[in-house]
Image (cartoon, rainbow, N blue to C red; front, side, top):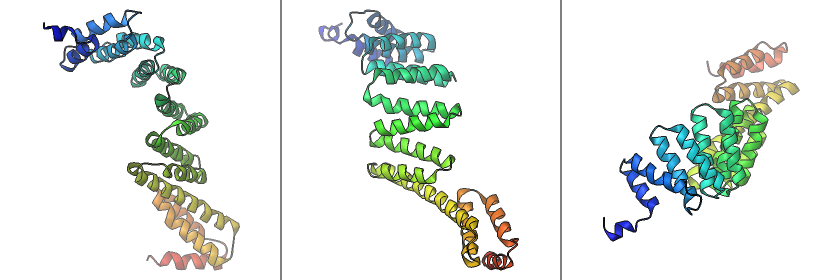
Length: 265
């Protein structure tokens, strides 16, 4: 071994060994560094050890290493360790443990990781059927995120709001996101905004039908509602709207709807 090789930092040596497939060699170096409370690179070594042990098929050892890194409180590597723990628990379907680990990410308080943790907690809330909590976490992610992650948070929040029958709120979220979105995200946000507008249109058309205006206005509302619903994948609902109009007890309205329906036949 040359003098220059002796000067290579142990972390770099471990990284090179891992990159060349020598996981045992890398783990040996990283284990020694992670076991030394006085080692300045202990947190980074412990995170690296967690990754290497996972690749070696030792999830319990990997978790133990990640907990060492987390205990250091290092703003970067403790956050990485908590993310590593959370992702591993999620892969195994251990949602409560995953939730606790994502909460630990928030506890470390490193700004770059907070939006990711909020998005993950929202995902777990949806799996648990807690949509109020999911909405709260998505709004928190949106408030803490930069443009890139913020666009994803806005999309997920808008989707949740649409599912909850709140298209107006969804549209507002998307419009705000578009003001700061990167060019790569604009098209997706605009498509989702269009979907929100379709839902708003359906709600307005349905409201107009329920308000019971004159026959031409109600007939137009029925037609527009029936023709818009299939765009949202609701062809069966569209059929029921046509039937409602065609069989309406008001013969004038039924005739108006029939004229509009027959334009396609």
